[in-house]
Length: 103
Image 1 (cartoon, one colour):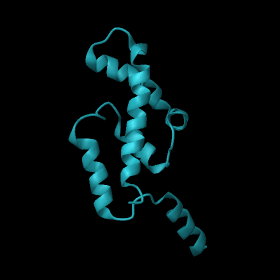
Image 2 (cartoon, rainbow, N blue to C red):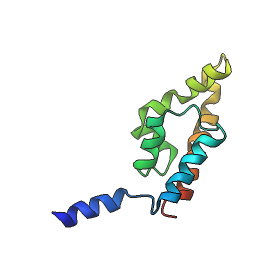
Image 3 (tube, rainbow, N blue to C red):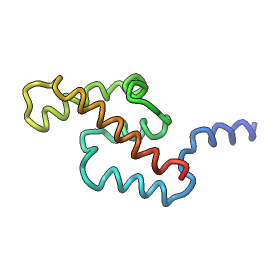
Image 4 (cartoon, rainbow, N blue to C red):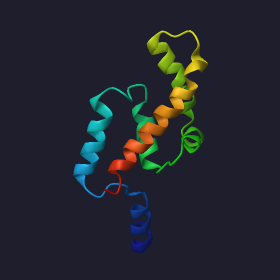
């Protein structure tokens, strides 16, 4: 039982030390690039080891509304114009998180 628990924890343990966790957290808070993501979305993308934008949109359904949140914040009329930008933003976040995982 103990071995299975350890294997489970190791499978989802993406950070090897506290410094990597702190750096990832700082990155997310630093420049406001990811301000339209909810804390739940960021935690889900991080903890589920999501690798692609398509996988992210399937496993975190609230990300489908990200372009609407961005459009509202910017005061844009055309919500769907930001879909490409939204996909790039999700991809950027995944890449930034990967930089600190298993570092």
